[in-house]
Image (cartoon, rainbow, N blue to C red; front, side, top):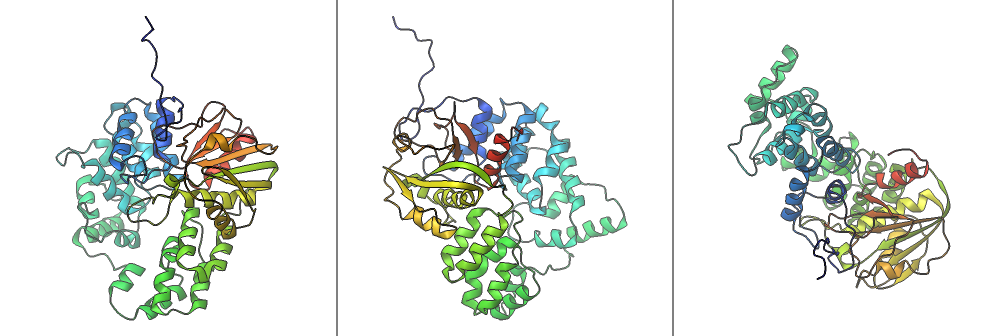
Length: 433
């Protein structure tokens, strides 16, 4: 009789044999490109969230905390690190990580309220663990009146004043006690934000012009509102000046692609700012080949409210890599592999997107007969239809699908911020990331 003592084979959603990986690697691939509870092309958001919660139970707490911090600080994700923190607080070992974890994943006042919403998602009557009360309460200490007021509005189930009442932190001095009293009583000074200014219902052109003149817009707010400024009749030169003043901060490369898609007249300024924001990358010698997945699953929207896709992620990372690697050739792959011109910036994005129809995901075939190279980088969601051979190369996974192909000899990297390319530099310098 044939033995039954054998692990079953696993496959990608498209049918290629997938690698079997440990729980920590599964958590990393599920988290690092995850918009919490947003469905992806192959898997529902609730399914991904539940898988993350189950994995936390079987992984050492310090490893889960490290993944949460990396997702927040390196991948610049907002909500999934809060889910990891919440699931850690369900475990005895996890609660020991609270003191070091909360200061790293609570970066804005509304992260406090968002965490509590996640905490009570399954059971609104569950009491807060004392470590949670202390961690969230201590987080209030680092926010001033402007920050608290900016994130205190909106129709939210859990408000900042509720969180303050529940966590009951001890103020450091009388000034902080007065600040928190004003938060609870609803007496915080109205912040001068674009949301508040536009909600007044006055002259939108004058409002945007003033905000621009006073440099009162954050980087993401600037990129997202270029179209609104144009519709309001703001002078093009004022908008250009606003774009030139954008700071990298927590911006992702795809933020620039979204802005350029809706505002082609400002593409030169957006492209110049893109290069500036991601210019601090070490230049790397050697012949480099980059393969960019443009299959249908990569073209799916990141969320129901977003027009951005994982293909945008792949293109934006290729745009940065084009500047990093001195000798580079770039190919798209779907049903076939097509070389694209090594243009710079948005020209490279256009060359990739227009290189061929988006029909399939034949990564295995794309790897055959590649030109001679020193370095191979694949940007993909790993859902190949055909078998993928073991290769010495970097496979950058930009999705949260359960199974993937890029393990074994591959150096597997999960995520979609520009930091995934920094990993390559660290790896080749034999410096632990």
